[in-house]
Image (tube, rainbow over all chains, first blue to last red; front, side, top):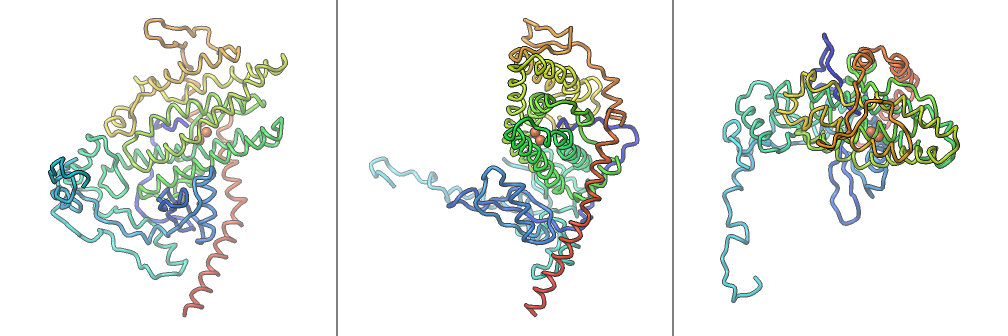
Length: 111
Length: 359
Ligand SMILES: [Fe+2]
Ligand SMILES: [Fe+2]
């Protein structure tokens, strides 16, 4: 709960290696909150197979009817973009893609 | 927001980590590569451009996300804090689990089961967030089991009466709420999102606890005594939950600079005290602090001296139940080994069958 436990002398720290340790794969969980909405990423679970991953996802992420549908995807199969500013920057300088770029006289009405 | 340009102009550069084979259906293969495909630890640790982006992100009050460059110290601090937070949720099930079979009514029992189940969920949200930093859950659980990582000291105190279910929900969960509301603004995206999810569930915890206390406060003399005894035992440990005083809190400045922490231990503790004292008064209970007084100038409730010797003794492993809590956790893990083995064997068998069919 208060989770800042003071560090004691000689405490060993966990080092991130990105390596998997342990038995079960990790699955990313996507939940559809209600009909008509997209599935949205909410977190991950561990499970031996897709079937139990779905059950674990239901128990972990929908205890209060937060979802009507769940997808699980092996985390290792996600492909990600390079999230540097350079990746998405080229879209920043094209204001003419937006309707507010154009000045239209009031007399024209709804447009 | 305009950030300094990261790296060279890598428009449409391929992801730095090679994509795993997508058509691999074998369970064994998945097992080996169960790291997240969206992590990028390859170019993490020696990139000045990455650091500039990181600093600008923090300065702008924006969130750092798993794939971003981050200082090694930031990553390690978060792994430690999120893991210990997760362990606290998990170990936190034990003191309350102790009373599930002895709840006074069926409804209280159902509520307590739901509450304890939520705490398991909180642990899982947090392990999931920790894993986005490139550490695996099994590794963290091992570190809990072998004592290399700790959990909140509050759970090393025993639950001696039913009133303790009230005191924990009301005091311990409320203290957790004060702390976690602040952490919703933490700079690391997955941690912050886990806090938002947890906070949505916590007010149920605090309210069910206070409702237990209310019922006892309106009960018989014996019930009121039970309530008072419980408050006497939980008040000071609840205040200790916020950690050492600011003057002794060595990592606070760095954590605040990194946006992991928004308020100091003493600020959060004061917030908790101010909201809790009137609630105790409403119960007709006494808080076990003869020096407790209201300061008209600051409008704060001021407390007497916290027994920091007790605090450090419990942190160092010498609380009433440190050994029992871990022993119980390890026993549960070992007793359940056959379930994990069976699930693994079943999954492998199903995967092999699917490969046969598709061949
Ligand atoms: Fe919790
Ligand atoms: Fe809680």
